[in-house]
Structure formats: structure tokens, C-alpha cells
Amino acid sequence: MRTLGLLLILIAGIQGEIPAQTSNEIRHPDHRWVNEFDDKVLFTCPTFNTIVSVSSQHHSYHEDRLWDFKCKSTFNALPACAWTNYVNTMDEEFSFTCPFDSIVTGVEAYHSNYYEDRRWKFYCCRVKNSCNKNCFWTDYLNLFDDYFSWVVPNATYLVGASSYHDNYHEDRRWKYQYCTQQPC
Image 1 (cartoon, one colour):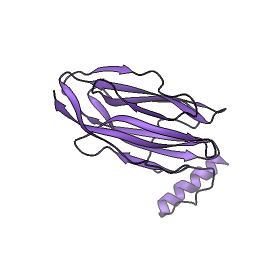
Image 2 (tube, helix red, strand yellow):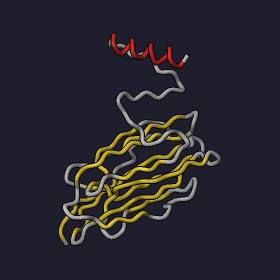
Image 3 (tube, one colour):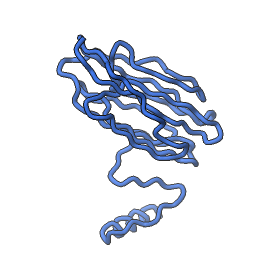
Image 4 (cartoon, one colour):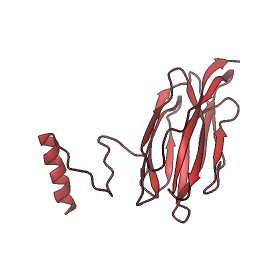
């Protein structure tokens, strides 16, 4: 049956039409998600790169999110990097900023089906003599249960994240902190 469904999608794609999405399917053409529902999220940018965009799709059946991240070239020298400890417990609000003027270059999270939530870690990197300046927080980028995609503004870098969980929706709302980098 699954083969037939894939064949119909292929035929519809050739004809220029995509079959209607059912309530338990997520289709995002040509998109590679970092995780599957209920599985670990683990993403790090290549050396010399930092995260430049974040995309996420919630699914109410799984009460979880798919995640995707893109990177941009950032450092001209080999950065010093470290993973944080978990920045939250299940169902807990958090506000996190990379320490020591560093920039987010990776994320890790695991999902609990009991809490229908995730605990998060961040991978932060920096080079000597660079300091974060002119820092701003976005507004919340998503409503509960919604897709969102955000690109770090030009000439700035992702340095932090803030999120709170709602037990009714079993989802989180997200906002991000970004800064310029200047010599110090």
C-alpha cells in the first residue's frame, strides 16, 4: 500500500499536482529534517560555521517537532567549542545565551513521551578577540502546533534561545537571540 502511495505521489508530481495532505502526514518538499518524531535531535555545523537558520514542524499526533538547521561560514580561525549541560528540565521555561561571547553552532535534544517535551543542549564556539555586541531577541516565532522558519539577520549570529512549554498543546514557543561580532 505504501508503494502505491509513493507511486501516486510520483505520478502526481510529474503531472504537476500533489495529492492532498492527510491529517497525520507532514510533507515539506525537498526538505531534510534532522530528526524523526520522538527521536534525538543532534546537529552541529562544520568547523568554521555557525547556525544561520532554524525550521521546525509540530505534529499533534506525536506531540513533537521535526527540526532542521542550516549553517553559514563564520570563523577565520579555528574556534574553541564546548557543549553546554542541559539548559532545561521537562516542561520548564528557559532562556539561554552562549557564554564568553560565543555563537551557537550545534544543538542536541531528547524527547520524553511521558512529558511530551524535550531537554536541550547547545554547542557554542568562539574565537579569541571577538565579542558579541548589539544583541537582540526576536519575538516568539511560532504559535503552538505551528510550523516556523527563521533566518538569522545578515551580519549577525545566533547566540541564544528562549522557550516555554504548554501542557495543553504539548508544544513549545520559541524565540532567538542574535548579535553582531566585533573585535574586543
